[in-house]
Length: 359
Ligand SMILES: Nc1ncnc2c1ncn2[C@@H]1O[C@H](COP(=O)(O)OP(=O)(O)OP(=O)(O)O)[C@@H](O)[C@H]1O
Ligand SMILES: [Mg+2]
Image 1 (cartoon, rainbow, N blue to C red):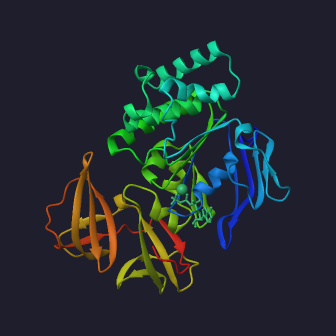
Image 2 (cartoon, rainbow, N blue to C red; image 1 turned 30 degrees about the vertical axis):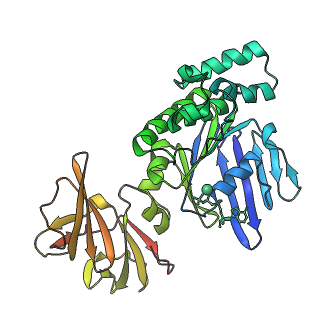
Image 3 (tube, rainbow, N blue to C red; image 1 turned 180 degrees about the horizontal axis):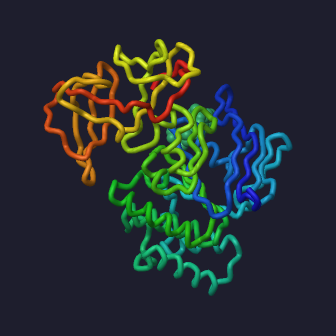
């Protein structure tokens, strides 16, 4: 990276009693990026975001925002949230119930010492930008959840922060509104030119919004990169299993006499240097096919369900307790529990070392 990173994180750690919430992460984020912290519940996303925002003191490591050291675990430096040029949006909107929408959005500007007329102009501007100017004189209790969320966003961007931090801001909204607000948030992100960090455990949300994704697991970063890199070359079986709609298939195969073997089925030639042991083989859902009759590299499976999605079908089948996802061009004509044969391509999409993990 030649330009100065907007966010530089170095060996960041947070320990709560005997829980290591964040286990020494490193990250560089360029100005204007939309970074998503993605991972399962408890992996340390919120703790990382709270340390970025200055709401949590690191146990170790450093955070630099625009080249300024704002947190240092070792030196005990912690620049308070109000002096980081950052705005935060949480899942709960936390609007002041006794203030009108106008007053809610004006509040941070007042705190920052904006003059009355500048304040008024800026509030009207952001309310119009978020299409909520009609509710300026109402109280938060008099507008819908989706509208409240827009007010929370308006309030956050009003002071023109250089950083926007979001913690699962859309999880209280219904599916349609959530999709709408994703687009809206991206519009906000682009218009403000801020560097955004967005926490979610929803990989669809991450894939549609992010310029970069950090997949987190047990307090560390499993993979960092743009969405298509994570999709095309997942670095670990965990990432492969977490990303994609539907996610990729992982099969634990044995290497026997230079061949991959799964449940007595020969899945093709193993990579030359691989010793006799088990491997995780990754197959993308669109690399598999279903047939009514047996054949080479075809695994007997039971049909479970098929969902039509935009001219394709996402099909789920089972082989014993292994669930497999297949994407087909057409909906198969099959009954629940019917036996079909799943054909594997001659090579897996990716091969991983077997670390005795379960997926
Ligand atoms: N204040 C705290 N005191 C003790 N443990 C905490 C505290 N905050 C978080 N933890 C623990 O740290 C770990 C990471 O928590 P964190 O809230 O960062 O996870 P998360 O990835 O945001 O999860 P979720 O998706 O459920 O919000 C968890 O094991 C959690 O129980
Ligand atoms: Mg969280």
